[in-house]
Amino acid sequence: MRDTKDPYPEPASSLNIAAFIDRINHGVAVFDERLDLIYANRTGAELLGLPQTDPVKPVDPAGPPDDRGAAWTLACREAFESQATGVFETYHAPSARWYEYRIYPSKREIVVCITDITDRKVMQAALEVRAEKYRNLVETAHDLIWSVDADGRITFINRAAREIYGYEPEELIGRDFRDLVSPENRARQEEIFAAQPDPDNRFVYRQEVEVMHRSGERRILLANAVRLYDEEGIPVGSMGTSVDITARKSAESELNETHDNLRALSHRLRELQEAERRAITAELHDRIGQNLTGLGILIQKVRGRIPEEDADVYAAEFDLLQALVRETTRHVRDIMAELVPPELEDYGLAAALESFADRAAAAGGLELEVDLPDLPPPPPPVEFSLVLFRAAQEAVHNVLKHAGAARLTVRLAEREGVIRLEIADDGNGFAPDTPLEDALPAWGLKILRERIESIDGELAIETRAGEGTRVVIEVRRPV
View 1 (spheres, rainbow, N blue to C red):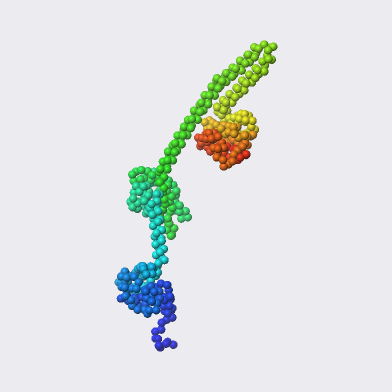
View 2 (cartoon, one colour; view 1 turned 180 degrees about the vertical axis):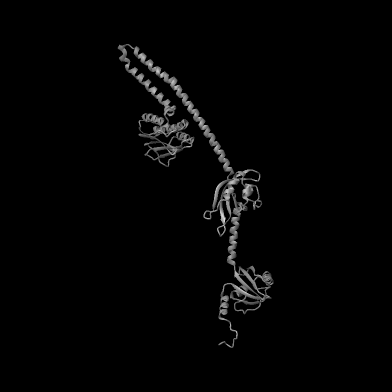
């Protein structure tokens, strides 16, 4: 039965809503068309400067207890007139807090939701400071930082554009980045930019790009770029950085040119050295060799003219003279063989190495192990083989002079077009952390390296103190 004392009782749900509104942390206030306060929940009363115990009563919006002032009043009146939701933020100096007022107008009333946004404003300020730092970092960076849209038009570029392109950043916004690429590189850039995007791999490329300065000067950039995608995975552009490496590339070019000149000079020097070796060998053969032969014949003739009764008296001296001539002739032939190995041109690198290793091991009293198969046909050019032979000579001479070894090993092999030459000993060796220049004769090592580098080979020296040394040379067979 309905209570006759209250013909229009408030539904229980309305009471619950009122209690809920009174307890939320956001302020809620209702004003009439004259901006007189009709209702404020507990938080709203606090934020409006009304004591919580005060009854709801009209307030003067032009001079409220806090410092909202005329701007707040104007925002409310504009909302009434336009009947559009408005938003107003203000700073309350006494409490040092920021508040946001969301204004929802109706024909006769206006509802204002008041929210303390101090934490948000503090965070925004911190983000703005951080953003300004990054903005300054990007703008003052020496490297180029840029972004383009899906059509390749520049949407951002930092101040480095002035130095690299000769344009102000504002002049480049909206331009197609491919217009700045040199004509020779443009097709390649269009191909890369048009490539099917892969959402799982946003990296586009890392490559050198030649671009055009406003003056017509060409610059070389090392560019790194990534694709940008929207929330649905659709590509919307790219962004990246570019480093001006023009000076570095110029220095590399000059260095390469110098290296080529040095290689040509080294090649010419080797030619002169080999020519000199051949000349010395010819002199040894034509003069000293013939003289030794003649000396041996003369000694034999003189010995034959000594009376038989005196022959025994001088026999020992003549034997010594003839032995000395034979030994000197052998030494001269060994020198000639080292200067110009006759087997190299006649029988190839393996035969020349074996002959040389035999002589070296015999001279040093070393046990010799060789594994010197003939290289697969066709044989390498003589000049190429001669460089390897000279390198082997230098390595073996180091063994004889410094290793204190009892065993010498020489191996030659070729696999998949790479020739490998190995000279090893069981001598003193040296600690792995010892600089090679301190462990091996400086000039010998330098010459050895230069020889191998002249044919684009690689030199490795493996050693351990008391466990010998292994010199490994690897070089690709010339085409």
